[in-house]
Image (tube, rainbow, N blue to C red; front, side, top):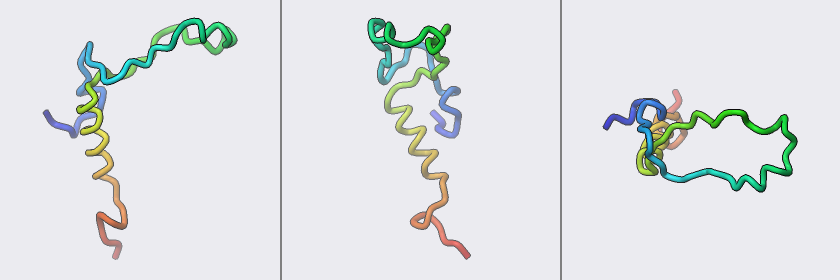
Length: 70
């Protein structure tokens, strides 16, 4: 698998590293205008895929420990 793709491109339906569902009784305290009408369109990727993706992104950043400024 290539990790030069966007996280949405490596997403596969049903893969989950962690489920962020919130208990519905906690939502009763929020004003109605703050509640979402639709579910978030988050990518579905396994935890190792997410770690590899963001590690690859971090290695593309320039830093004093990864390059030299002339």
